[in-house]
Image 1 (tube, one colour):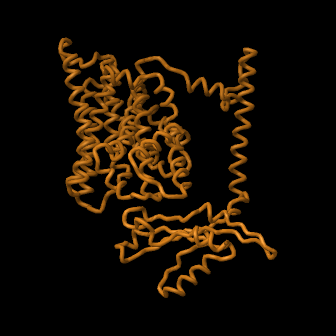
Image 2 (cartoon, helix red, strand yellow):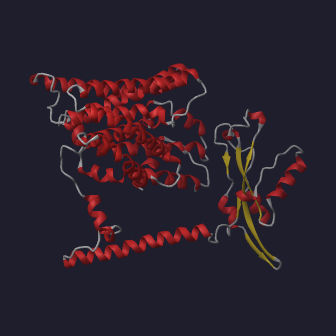
Image 3 (cartoon, rainbow, N blue to C red):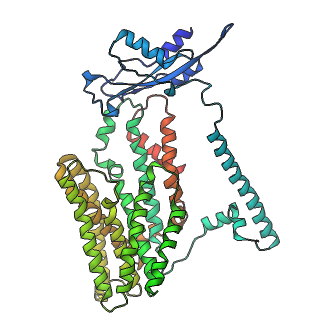
Length: 495
């Protein structure tokens, strides 16, 4: 009976739908680990082992990990990976070593706490204890109407942090309420993109449908999710320029001497653990390091009568360079395609800085101040129509160019798509700031987005770990469908 259970829990090859399903078949994980037979001489447990197999006749490329069939074998725990490799080579002499003990597990695997586990649990326990003590202290202060000994004593208080999280701030000249909505919507877009990205890496009975899904119009929200990251770069550049230029009258030496403080504050505030998605923070930090070289000369220029025009022209030229440079790299080096490099995202950051400069200097100017007042409303309406249609066309054309055009067309379009997207964002921010955004302004400035906006950084750091946990705990075949994709993304957002 034990032999039957072990063999039955092992992957069968070839399996049904070999050319249509994923190249993943993990057998029956739970059945394998349920094998637990006691006898006079000891105990036999089921051991589940994963392996990758390349079948040359099926057109596999040995350098492509997706060309391998990931299969599983259930074996008695007394057998080692070396034993199974020896058995495999007995039947096929050129059979490569497939199994490794590190990729095998039994029901008893991972039950003992390691030093890392103990340290992690201790840190979490300390944090929870601090939260409890700080919250009790905060509650005591509230009841007795006393003052705290030091603000740090309330740093872990659930009550104090809850008040800050749920606080709804009022409109002011120095607050861009539109960004709350943009950040939340963009973060949801990022989660949707990453949530779909894991589908090719799990066992699916209809993997071909996953590949064709991205070619459909209704999958635009997935294939263009990278634009959400461009939105965050744009916001980051805008806020830096908008806040920094508020103190543009400070002497040069004061501005220069504050640079180390800016760097240290930024590093301590945003430096997380090494995670896959933190490439964004790396790029954003590098742009931040460059920003004083641009903002200090601009602040000095603004003290002159023509300084604003000169600064705008300088940033415009810089943006043209940031458009041309990635395009040239792609056209000259056709194997270049790293969209995570900092220089490929500079255009978003610097266009945000340009808008931040404009809105800081012209903060007290009326909306569309260069146009006769009786034409402002119609000009605003026409511009909104053009901007929204342009942003929609950017999204639709990206999919069209990616599917039906060559490398050169895609390289040129990709370099122009980001500035086009940022132009749309610039108008949305500018128009909504002055109260001419209509429904868009109402939507993006909803109070609930202020609460969600404060949580976007936490979502950014945690969401991929949640997605990976969900992916790595799938033990059987899934069926891919539009409904399943939307359902999983919705559940991830709720989590």
